[in-house]
Length: 111
Image (cartoon, rainbow, N blue to C red; front, top):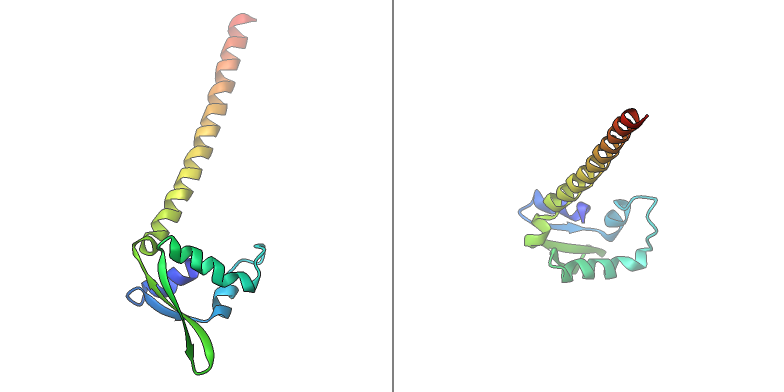
């Protein structure tokens, strides 16, 4: 979705991308088969991130993407999820520090 967003957001929400370019943007650590690409694109289309149409341009297969409202909000959603993870980590660290401090105070009082 990031590859689609990065190309389409600059061009008024539409872009042409070759399947090989989409596959190149997937990190190496992710188990992904190139035959799975149409199914993943279809699921993102059902979730209303974009509309995708398969086209041929000079004999090469291309996907024509048109972003929808969820597609434009994708980056905001990613940032919000990262913020939530950072908040949970900070809350966990603060809870651990508070527990340690209370334990040290109680240990000092009762010993």
